[in-house]
Length: 99
Image (cartoon, rainbow, N blue to C red; front, side, top):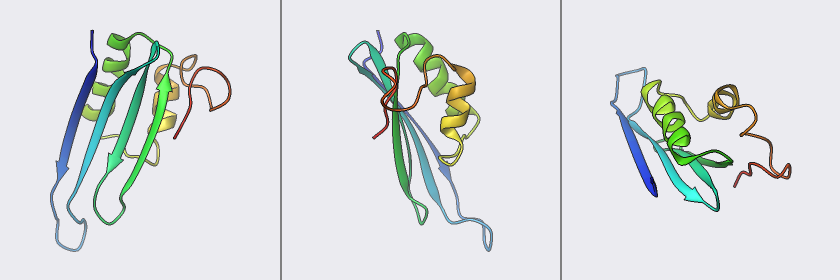
């Protein structure tokens, strides 16, 4: 059983190209499903969450996939939807919600 998992990737400063930042991927069990959260620090900081109606071990695999592929916040919901189309539905559809 996975109650919480957190994976963080650090990106360093690259002169004239990139400011340093962190990407953190988190998983928390949430009422029969799992809440996935992606947050980014730095000058383009953001945070987004969704709930997947899927077993925790599957959700952890999705979390690892996001982390290992450095999936950025701008596209992460599309990537999750491709990984598990039945589990990642828009808010208000009864399966997944965003905050």
